Structure formats: C-alpha cells, structure tokens
Length: 495
Ligand SMILES: Cc1ncc(COP(=O)(O)O)c(C=O)c1O
Image 1 (cartoon, rainbow, N blue to C red):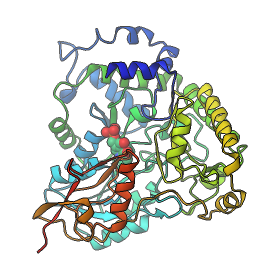
Image 2 (cartoon, helix red, strand yellow):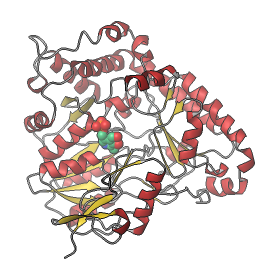
Image 3 (cartoon, protein in one colour):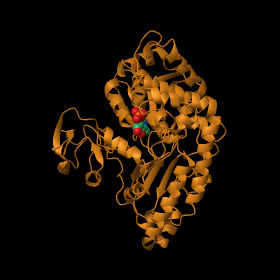
Image 4 (cartoon, rainbow, N blue to C red):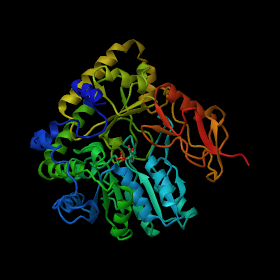
C-alpha cells in the first residue's frame, strides 16, 4: 500500500479530490513544518495532561472551544471517524426509539446506517431531480412541509447541504418551518465546512450561507474534505436547546473509538489555528483563484459549467445564476459537446496527473480545497485547453449551443434513474441475482461509491433502469455497494 501512495505522491499530482489540504505545502507555509517532521512522536494516548475526548477538560476542550468560537455556535465536538460518526450520533440523539426521521432521499449512507442504529423509521423527502445531469438537486421547503404534514409525529429532519455537487438547499426557510413544528433540524454539511469562513472573511459573495448561520440545530462538517486537516477529522456543531449536549456526547462515545487519534485531533487544532491567524489570506487566495479559474474556463469553447439557477432550476454558467445556490468550490465541468462524458474526461485529466473527485453522466466534479494553489488551477486550464484542442474534430457546435441554453442535447452516456416506488421496508428477505431483481422490493441499499448516496433504498422497488445503470457502472469499474461477490442483491420475499 505505502508503495502505491508514495508512487502517487511522486507524480506531483493536482488533487481535486478529498482531503482539502492537498498535501503538506499549506502546513509548511503556515509554520507547522516542525509538527509534520515529528508527528509520529506525537502519536500518544491519554497520558496525564493529554485530556480525554469523552470527558474533555483540558487540551481537547481548548480545541473544541476554538471551533465553537470559529463557527459561532454553543458547542463543537471533535470527530475522529469523519462526519459519518457525527451523523449517526446526531440522529440517535434527536429521534426517539421507533420514532420517525424525515430524511432527504439523497442522504449519505451514514444516515441510513443511523436509522438502523437508532431504531428509527425513515420518511423520505425527495430532492429535486436535475434531468439534464441525472443528479439530485436541492430539497425544497415545500417538500419538507409535505413530509411534516403527513408525519406530524416525526422527531427530526435531516438533509445534505451542500450535496456532493455543491448544490445547497434553502436551510434558512427549512429551519424556520422545522422549528415552527418544534422539530430538530440536522444538516449534513460534510461538503460545506468551509462555507462559514468564506462569509466570515468577506469572500462569500454569491455563495450560500453556512447551515450554522441559517439556524440549523446540529451541523456536521467534514473539515477534512475541504479544509486543512487529515482524512477522518471532522466537527459536529451543536447550536440548540432542542437536543441536550450531554445526550449528544453520550451517543458520540458509543460510536467513536475509545483510542482517538491525537494526530487527527492535532490537525484539527492546526486547521483552527490557520483559520484564526491566516483565515483571510487562505480563504481569500482560494476565492481569487476560483474566480480566475471560472473566468478562464469560459474561454474554452464548448466547455460548460453545471449550474443551478436561483429558482432551483438548471441555469447557465454565469456567476449570477449560481448566486446563493451553488457552492462554487465544487467545479462541475461538462465537455459533452466534444462527445466526452465525465468518465472519459477524468481519464484525460489523469494523463496530466490531475485527479478529480467524481463524475456522473457528462459532469465531472473537481473538489477544490483550501490547499489548492494557483499552480494547480493553471495546470488544469492548460490541460483542458489541450484536451479541447485534441478533440476539436468531435466538437458539435449545435449541440453546445442547445446545451448552453439549458437544453439536454448532450446526453450523458448513462445517468442515474429516478427513485423507484416506495413500499414498507421488507421484514422477510432473500437474495436474488441482480438480473432477476426487477419489480422486487429492495431490502438493503444499492450504493454507488463515490458518492455514497443510495441509488436504491430499503423499501424501494427495483426497476429495469436501475439494473442497467448498476451494470453500466460496474462495467465502468465503479464500485456499487450492496451486491454480493456472486452478483446477488437482498430483496423482500414474495408474499
Ligand atoms: C453527503 C455526505 N455526507 C457524509 C459523508 C461522510 O463523511 P465522512 O467521510 O467525513 O465520514 C459523505 C462522504 O463522502 C458525504 O458525501
């Protein structure tokens, strides 16, 4: 394994995937070279003076308080198994046993796991579906209202914002609606831990507000995905009287390791210090580089940037139409006009040692982070220009013209089908070959990874389209969780 990682590092890669630090440079730039050189010596356990994650009174408490100040919330908890742990603890702390959880249908698999661990019943809120791209969009306040009207006994609501592609929901309106019914709002902000800081340091023009500023009760953020800390280190922000801090703490200690890594926690500390002492510079550089990058992307004929209009519909690639809805740090490229789908574009960029996060249909998502430098963006522009030039013969101007106007001319090679009809979650289960599963009720989940958002949820009917999609993904070498080595899936037995 280490050989693979070292060989990869030797390529001088441009990382547009997690984690957000993008390599050691940012830590050295801000004076943490000493810690990088000695961190193995700092890998200790709860020795005297080292505090305890689950009874924090000393050095760990200091970091927690630092985050609470940075996010302007009542309490921040350090997470050492990613947002996944924070999501599970939040659901367990907010939903009574056998209680109902209103959850966006495009929640991450950690939330589906939380249902099992909390013994909760799901009520699915359906996000908008962006036909053109075959991906989920925002969850509207009307959809949350519908779920609450039909399920007045639900305890809590949870949704991701931003979603994997950077599309944000109107958390402010959702928070007002949820609180009007005295329910708890949990926001999975795994992909948006940075949003608060764009606004805090004055670079948030056109960017959605953070869930903390928008009134959510519990907000879970993967600091590691976009900011300067190591993979798995994240934060759970608690800003409410509706959920007890002590209950939350109790749930966290149930699901997190009793040997939390002091290295992970130290990197959370370092990230907090970078934001406190150099936040304006680091976030400012990120924003300036992004603004320049978007401008230069416009120069490449036929390259489209996925966008979402202010009304939630699909907009054009101008900054105005992105305003308030898109987290601009996720750059969603579409070179469908050249006949290049997302998968092909990823392969092309990898030839230049540029590594994107993921693709769906024609869209390829570059996940930028605090550690990306101007050099990374410049290398990418040069590579994209090169790719456009090499494929110039395949460029179809008509297709781009329709496409740029919001049409659906450049069809993705294959795109995710819409969710199937919902039935009660099966109690009696059996395994059947994927090929024979059409019309059956899914009893576990089928989850393409990444992004880790279930394609089929428990209780949903499996359709022919879903089977074809799963097969296409697997043929493309993508991972789909929920299928056995023999190619079987778990479904409800026929009555
Ligand atoms: C929307 C969403 N929520 C939660 C998670 C889990 O976050 P973590 O990797 O920090 O556990 C992910 C992971 O990619 C995600 O995409």
